[in-house]
Length: 281
Length: 63
Ligand SMILES: [Zn+2]
Ligand SMILES: [Zn+2]
Image (cartoon, rainbow over all chains, first blue to last red; front, top):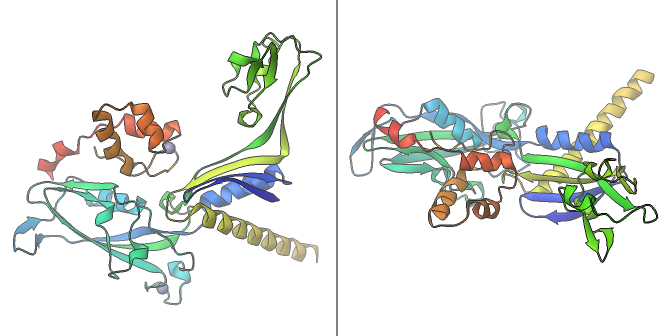
């Protein structure tokens, strides 16, 4: 399996994979979706009863949304992840919660105001690396006399347990397209030009040419016998070459996600090999 | 209600784009171009923004 990066930004990746098979590439897709660990808020403690601010004014701990919904929304906020952190139940602390398996946040706001993900403050003050990067996600809106005071704790998990721990979204791939026109058969009528949704064909002079081969999605609309009556167009997807793309929610960079995914896949294959070898013995 | 944090279908974070979208469309920009600019390329994410109705304000007195 060889990977050629076509596009790589902080949250998006697009690459060409060659020398592989549909099974392996689908395994990579599934690993990216459900096996990469990341941090997400899992425990939220709400302060109930009256809340006083610094000036001594009193607020009620109510908001227009149920506490459960606020907690759910907090869970979906992407938390910056350090992959060296451990899952809570596999940590040396025995599941109690410690700095190497948990990140604590506090959130205190008094109404009337909008509460945003950027209002989550890390309990370890001054630690800028765990501050939420996407600060504009609305959590709830507070009215006059309403306030919110919560402590939220993030822990490591994978997408298998809940979608809030899913790092990559929009994960997909297509076979590398190959579009060829047999010039000896083609009548240059150009019926294939408007039928193609990705504008793969165009007229150059009075000849129909393939101008955008890479954009082809193998929909086969152009090879239909009512469109290309002479059967000159040949479209095939190569099952050993793929264009793969995915994006992340911002908790991990696209590069780290891909590296971790490949590492996990490798590990899984090794485990499988070992299990098979015990069967033979 | 309030804008969902993520797209129901694909899981992309879309909540943070809503306010920018509303502001820029009110300023007279083409919604299509604003969505493209905000990086919402899939139609599942685009419908989250364009079909949203912000009714949270009406629930505040009931809190
Ligand atoms: Zn621990
Ligand atoms: Zn979507």
